[in-house]
Length: 111
Image (cartoon, rainbow, N blue to C red; front, top):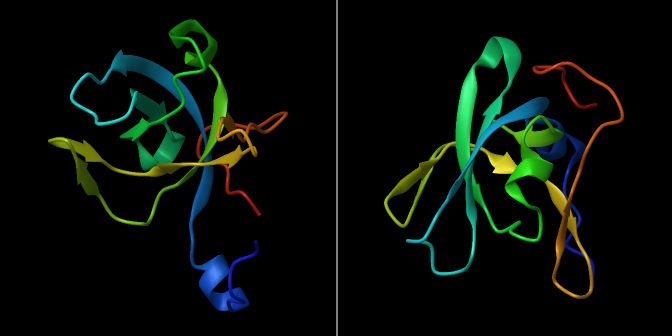
């Protein structure tokens, strides 16, 4: 099932950046299993999010390059301030596979 058509302007208004995971913590307050993840986005700074990607072990996430949408505004999730959206691809089995650039520096713009 595909989503409705959108404009290029709407798509390009999303600020997607490369970041490096610097911290991962358990999130027992979440309704579904999730991690609290801290990512360094270089000149933007360090931002935190929660993500239902518990199929990744903590040590698989630390140091990993990821892609985040950093201008969607903060959202409260079980009392936790989530500051960006961590991007991934969800398979038919429901498992999220994180998008990961082959190379990059925290803060690089995804285009």
